[in-house]
Amino acid sequence: MRTSFTFLSRAYVGLVLVLSAAPSGWAGAAEFVVHVASIDDLKAVVATVEPVHQLVARARIGGTVTALKIKEGDVVVAGAEIALVADQKLFLQMQALDQRIKSQQAQRDKAKADFDRAQELLQRGVTTKVMFDQAKTMLDVADRNLAAIRSDRGVIEQQASEGAVLAPGAGRILTIPVSIGRAVMPGETIATLAEEHYILRLQLPERHARFMRAGDPVQIGGRGLHDEASATRKEGRVRIVYPEIQGGRVIADVDVKGLGDYFVGERTRVYVTTGKRDTIIAPREAIYRRAGVDYVHLKDGAEVVVQTGEQRAEGLEILAGLHDSDVVVTP
Image (cartoon, rainbow, N blue to C red; front, side):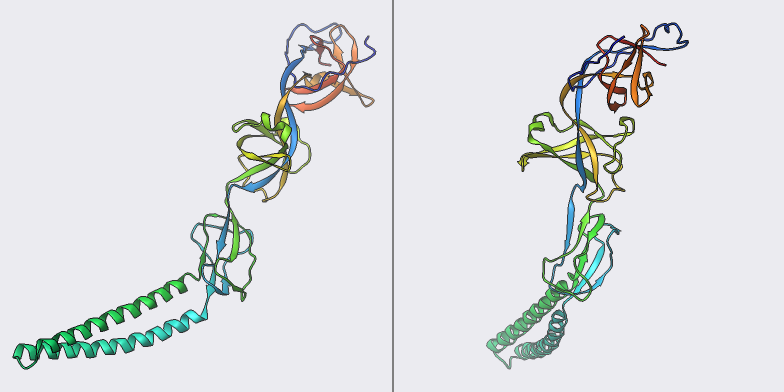
């Protein structure tokens, strides 16, 4: 009978399962041979949910916010009108240009009449070519002045149309730092949007930087920071490892499916590989508890106290109590 158990070094473990005949008194029991093996050492870190890109909708002209067509949490499509900024000076300038256009149109009509008269007189031989050229020049100047004023009005119209604030891309509205009636300047933020594609952003101590590579698999715990069994963890992959260390930490992004219903900034536990370690993993059904102590039953009939560790998909980690090549049976 063993009276003590040996603590194994913290490292990952492999499991060899061997089925054989059950020992006496354990009808139908299964036998398992456990071995020490080296597997990935998982480190639990906290990651936050972030959008791949955070977009900003800005005012293109200065003025007053006259309408907000969104609220926090709304989903919008690219190009959707989310707010309206109006500048009353633009409408006054447009009215002034309308009057200038009417005045210039009248001058152009007079120049056209003078040109027609000079052309008729030149054909009849009662005027000079100089007078005809002067009339033609006056008409050309009037036409070009009228076109210039109309172009100025087009510029004002374009500026007024830019009062409509459009969504720069599809996503979910995060913040709206303005309100109706507030004066804004050109380029001021009207709303921030998060693209629908979310990632997990995690930070690791720089001593683990050499273990992290783009494409490496990671395990995602349950939503929130509470512990979850490894069987219920999601799978993800490292999207990018940023080449800059900030505050002694390596920053990396992880792609995970099904993050669309998470809150931006929500934290969750992520398990990443930070090297190798040796340990023993036994089948969960081979471990039973009595009086708050965990036991396993060996093939030779001995009952051994074990210290358990992390729950993994292939079984439960045994930190102490078992040796390499021990044969355990299920109770």
